[in-house]
Length: 356
Image (cartoon, rainbow, N blue to C red; front, side, top):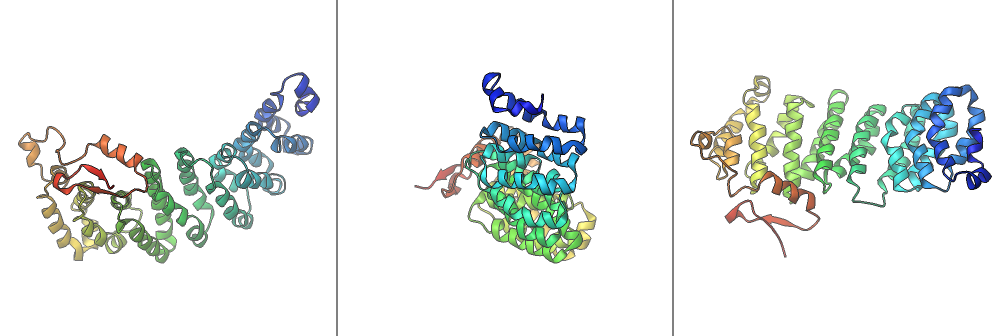
């Protein structure tokens, strides 16, 4: 009876949604019958996986990793891999979303050589989307890349995953940039343990892509990345000192208050860390000097995060300084900024003007 749910005559005379119900039930039916009866179910799977209705293909895309886990590695390669390749490279975004949501779980079922052979084409297909406004799709991509990086060696990750992580770091949506920071942090942690040279090369790429960018949002992201690396200790303190600190010290002079604020928050948190200070004796005087300078910054929020609490003690910090945009204003600006160049009106620091 179940196998007959994909019969064209029945779908036209009984219920046109029968194939959709069949697709929803497929993993449960396979689990009930067991993988030894795959030969009975495979013809039905083939019909469903190539159905003209995208909703049916989407259902299978979301559950194909479960089918793979029940069938095992060999049958996954022979019977399921081609379907995933087709969905990821040629199908609609709605179907690709299903593949992407559990891509790491599917790749776990593949032998190492098959993973490497198929990952580049599948990744390129997933990156090729029709709707750039679907930021949750890219957020899911960042999450999956973090898991997928554990399935490959460092050289492969550096070649295929790191460039995508940096690309996500340039996203227009703040949530994606934050997810990209966590992804980059996890990659650096992986490399710091097995390939310190590669770790240094990636940190150099981050400085080039973010720390020296003309867009203040990207400079701010670099500081947030460094803050994450430090607090989660994703890289060693000595490597942080040699690769990240010089750029942070430079960014302490940034014209944008929010960048200086992030630098102040990051550097101030290093002062009480004796392990960090002992590993970076050559920078300790510079850090203290920068903190002292930021305590006298013209922006009261920067002064606050540098450890200057006089404004609070004097009961003057009842609201944000007029020179500093509110968190809501900043978030709104971050989420709406496109490729147009922006600048800050320094005379009234904090008000964002679009260049005409």
